[in-house]
Image 1 (cartoon, one colour):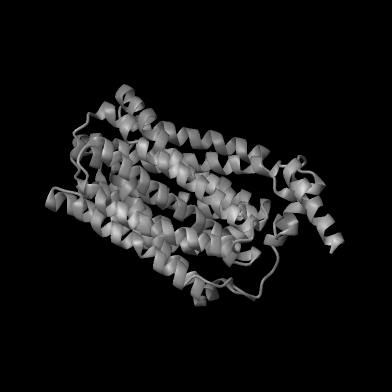
Image 2 (image 1 turned 30 degrees about the vertical axis):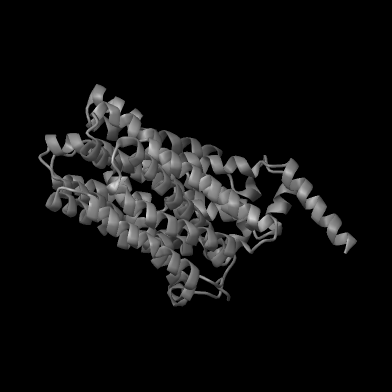
Length: 433
């Protein structure tokens, strides 16, 4: 018993004094921010594109749907490719691809070419989040993956948060096409730097042997993620927990896509603010998303560290609570009167939604064996975006038909609440060989 306590103390000392591993999540955070800048630029450019190219709300929603559907379908081969060829290789190819697709969007003049550019963007962005999940499983022990995931998943909120003021300023100065050219160029510069400096844990010259041992003690390290497994990729769909993750993430991404595509247009229509003001107000709700991601990861880590519950149950419990809160708040949003109260409710909604997405991504590292983390994470994301792809076009049709976003938010809130059912009653046990 004493020997075990000494070993545990030694591990804790290593974990607190040597923390190079926490610098790795910065790569994932920056890459994710760029990823979401390249998604969000459409929502900022939408008003000008509608006017300049004679588009409608439905057309903007259709572009969002084409991206989401392509992104969803490409999750399936992406997860397999990541597990087969490694995180660094696939991440590099993906960012270069989607950055070029982003720049091409700025050169489009017709709906058909715009849809083609969004299709290419969906193909390129598909490997991003599954790669992040894979790198997290390599660089962090299980107890830390919730917090690490919360940090890099916050990029999906930091991007939309900083996008409005920056991109609005660019559009005012240079026009809407410049949004796509500039964000595309940023991605190309980033991936060149990433390719030069990023290394896996075993190949890193800056990671001490003590810290590597600590990471590997709880299932981390890239060596464990390339081990063979008896489970075939196609058989993953036979597992109950995998289906729970697919359906639960669909419920979450449905409302997420509505916010991502229509938040700026919703504010312009319902709060009667100017386009210049949009740069400030459209970024505020995403601050809640950042807090939700990081705080959600921190809470699950503390619950695990204190022995209150297992890593899996900590994440499942947080998801359930946040899904119920999301449902209530989202349903109330269209009935709020006044800019301040509307922004408060949207901020709370994005906070709880983000806590769900962060925990859901971290959950893939708990449910899947090390060799299949990328695949399971990608399959969950496939479920979310394949079904959630319909959300932007449905919301766009509702807005064009009724002249209001009320039905879109009410139905979206109900769907979001159903995530609690799937993550609690269907997602339960890890995949066992």
